[in-house]
Image 1 (cartoon, rainbow, N blue to C red):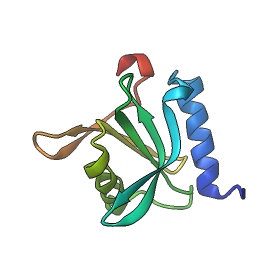
Image 2: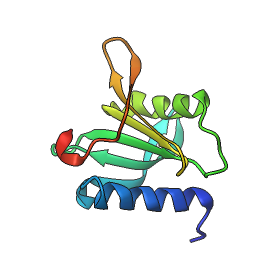
Image 3: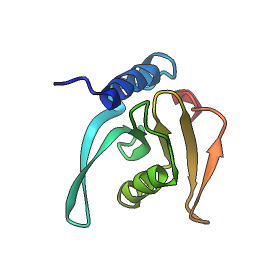
Length: 119
C-alpha cells in the first residue's frame, strides 16, 4: 500500500482517536463500504457506538486540500445512509467536528472532538 498524503492523515487521526480520545479500536472501521445511488463509496473512518450503530463519520483529506462546503456535502451524503450523530472532517491541519441536528436538518459545530467517555 502506498502512503498517500490522505492515508497519512487517516492513520494519524485513527491513532489520535485511540490514544488521545480513548475510542476502543474495536469500534473503529477504516474504509467501510456503502452504496449511494448505486455507486460504491467508502467512509475513511467510521466509529460505531456501543450498540453497533454508526456514531461518527470521519472524512480525511490530504493536508494540501482546503476543507470546503463541498467536503461537508460529501460526508452529509454518506450520512443520509448511515445516520450517524457526529461528523468530522480533517486534513490533518484543520479539524471540523459537528453534531447532526436531525430535527432541523443542520450541523451544530462543536469546539472540540469529545473523548469516547464524553459521548
